[in-house]
Image (tube, rainbow, N blue to C red; front, top):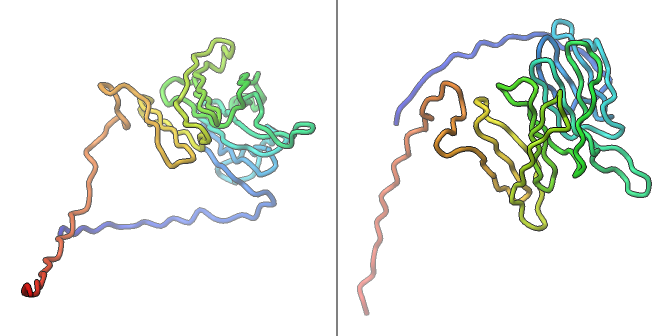
Length: 215
C-alpha cells in the first residue's frame, strides 16, 4: 500500500461577529456575496468583511444563488396570499459593478436553482424543482433556450451544479440520483484535467473454510 505526505499551511484571517445568519456565500469580482436567512444579500468587502451594500432579493429566503464576473443571480421564496411561501417566478439579478439591481429574469415554473456559465459572462442556467431548465442571457432575458430534465413522478430536483469547463451540467434529485448532461464526445469537467488518483485497494484477507465430513 502506497504512502504519502503533505504539508498544511494554516492562515487565520480573523473573526468578526455578525447579527445575520448567512446561508450561502459566493465570491465574485471584488466582493463576497452573502445570503441571509431573511431573503437579503450582503455585498461584503473582503478586506473588512463589512457590508458595503444590502440588497433585499426576496421576501422569504434565498434558495440558491450564484455570482461570477460582474453579476449576481438569486432564486428564492416569497409569501403568497392563501398559499404560504412559494418560489418566486423570477430570478433576480444584481450588478456587482454598479451595485444596483438589474431587470429580473422571468421563470414561471418557479426559479429554484441557478448557475452562471463559467466562460460566457452574461449567460446563466436556471432550473425549477420539476426539472425545467432555462438557458438565458442576462442582457436579453426574453430570448431563452428551454430544456426538460426527466424527473420521475413524486421526485424533485434539489441541487444544480456546472463543471468549471462549462461543458457538463449535473442535477441531483430527491431520490439521490444524478442527471449528468453534456456531449459524450466533448465532455470535460476541468480545463486542465488529470486522471483521478485513488487509494490502493486493501488486500482481501484469505478465508479458510473448515468443511465437516459428510455423515
